[in-house]
Image (cartoon, rainbow, N blue to C red; front, side, top):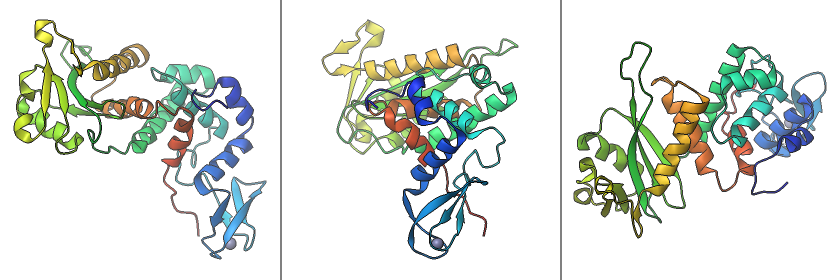
Length: 292
Ligand SMILES: [Zn+2]
């Protein structure tokens, strides 16, 4: 499989033709080909026990259930459906609406909605949130997500974002756009002394005083690029995010917005190795506790 492109649907079904293939992949990805047995302590190969979603130690027959701790553990939805849903989340650019999952999998809307939320939750856990700006220039900006609720009340949410050029993105929902809010939030995202580019919004003027070399591009005067001084990367991220949220998800409540932000961060941060998205997501599941 080409390593620089996401898996195609055809490749997906070649790799995961049945629930058993998915279970084998889950076992291998989470526990490796060999695994130190919790009971006998030996580095053991585990054999599939056909009648159960379990594997057993080649030495002491200790059972291991690879679904434990994952969203699949208590789900009656077939494992291949979960895998296909995860595949869609990894392969899409703008996200996957619950309606779309419902249609593709033939499950109920409620089930599709819950699957989407579970997958998004673990996408957020992959994200290490390592501070930005150790190497490249960081572009920071804030944007408004949402619009008006059913009663016509303004329910826009402000999101602060920062991207290290050639590196990762981080986003955070913020209460307002005052310097006293934006600067401390931004500092949490940056390594000390990171070089930062923003637009000329006044709240960012304190950055040099906080130890961050700061350049601004004067959007209010119609200036967008002055050599390396621009915010094109963070703006491109906002446009993908907005296309996803407005186009695919229609309405996202403030309560759920952080999970959607994580989903778009996850895809952006692994954009250079799309083949790794799938395994990274699976590795984010906690191991849980095997029954004694
Ligand atoms: Zn054993």
